[in-house]
Each structure stands twice: as C-alpha cells, then as structure tokens.
Image 1 (tube, rainbow, N blue to C red):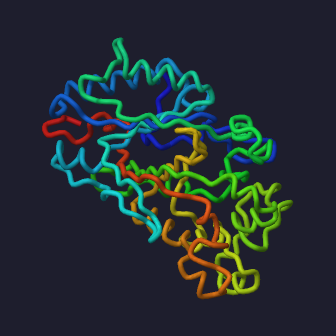
Image 2: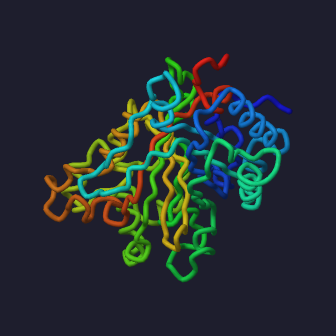
Image 3: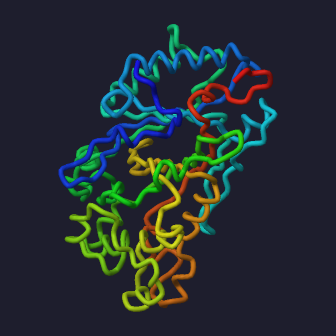
Length: 358
C-alpha cells in the first residue's frame, strides 16, 4: 500500500479539476457521529480501530475514486479519557439570532468518495457484523449524508429553481482557486496536536425557496459582492473580488453586503483562515448544508464566522439589517454545532490514552 499522508486532513492533492481549473471535491460525504460505550477505551481498542481503518485504506485508493477519511475527537472525549487538555473548546452560538443545539459527541468520522455506495459499505463494515465492527467501544449515534458536484442538487431536488450546473444548493461554486486556506496553513504548529488540525461541524438548514425568489444578479450580489453580477459569478475560477476592504462604501452605494465580501475581512495577509469541506444535504427532507470547517485553531473559525455576520453593516446603510440584505444570513438557520480535534494519522484511534506507547 502506498504510504498515506501523515495529516488526516491532507486531501487536496487527490482532487481532480473541472475543465475551467476549479478543484473538484469528492461528490458524496458522510459524517458518522460517535459516542463511546462500554467503559474507558484501552490500547487494544485503539489497535482494533486503527486496524479497521488501515484495512479499508489498503482496499480502497486514497482519494475521491476510493475513500478519504478524517477522524476527530470532541472535548468530552479528552476530558473523560485522557490527561490531555482538549485542543478545542465546546461549541457556542456564533450569532445573536442563533439558537443551535450545542453537541458533545465523542468523535466524528468524515468519509468522502465519488461513489455513494462506497460510503454505505464502509459504514456497514465499521458498525455492523464482521471483523471491522467497532460497536464494542463506539456507538454510531447519528449519520449525516450529503453531496457536492455539478448537477447533483438540481437532480435531487427537482423543480426548486436550483441551476442544472450548480454544485451546491445556493447555486454557486464553493471551491474556487484561492478561496480556501492551504492545508499547511490549517495544520497545528506545536503541542500534542502538532501536524493535525481542528474541525467545526455545523448543520445548517437553507431556505432555498426564498433564495430563488431573488433574481440571479441579486443572488450573486448577496453571495459575493454587490459589484459581482450573475454572468461574472458563473465564470469565476479564481477567488472572487470581494470588495472586503471597501465594505462600508460599497454597502452605502448598493444597500447590500455580500457573503464573501464580509467573510473576506477575516483573512490574514489576504489568505483565508479556514478550509471548508462543506456539502449539500437533504437529511430529514430539508435542504441544507453540513458545514465542515478545518482550521489551525478554533479562533480562526470564530473570527471568520463573526466577520461573516457583518454585524456593522446596518450602520453603513439603513436598508441593511443584521440579516436583511446582508449576505446569506437571512437564508440560513444553524441547527447544531460541534467541535473536534483531528490528530495526525498515527494518533487517530483513541488518541492520547494514558500509557499508550504512541
């Protein structure tokens, strides 16, 4: 088997690109939300979990054509089972209008592949009868599913107004060149999590019907900037010009703020602070997004999320509210939040247990 990257989150070298040069994320995703059962885990439990993951990796290529995995551990796991302070804090609401469920799962396993059946098979092997079964120590508490890719949202919710070529529910490309934090930028530089990363998982419901009641240019203005029209947005390959540095003036001129425009103010030296692994969902029959964000520290996520709110925008023009005409704020409801620490691959199975030789 070819050696896998030390960092679990090192996915992007495996991505293909579309004809315009945009990176293509895996088309199908699952989040397996897990809780410990049966008492404190042991080194033998860690060896069994690691063996199961290695078995899958030996059978499936590393990448969208096979399988990508990323296993993170929640604050409660660190508090209950290790002597290591949790590298991530528990989740909190991130906007004054939010009332999300603040979750405390022990772990989250993110699976991704271009073949949806692969993810179902992997889930069944890890949490069903057979040699890879983990149910003696891990309970599969919840499964979240979804997709990202040209045509998938429209095909799975026909008649909703979603453009036929759209890769996500709101119709725009998420993975433009330059609008993601590089994987090396999100890797932790020191401490027990060195080489790993942190993960924030949100479940967001989207008001797709109201979104598509807006004309195409209005949707583009709200997604990017009031100075980005629909024709330009459709052709974007590289990072959109977001007018982040001139938000007060542009907001006053147009009476709107763009999502990318607001979020861009969180960048450091022009570089994004988070790497998004988000995907569309129809879980529970409702259009939404499972927003998976990777970053060096949770402060990177918190700063990005706070600037996305553009709470100062109403002071620049009376037509703008904290949600009205303010990016995509009016079209999303955050239902839950959770935080996880993602160790390097060698430590991914029940990390930092007392007495563990790793």
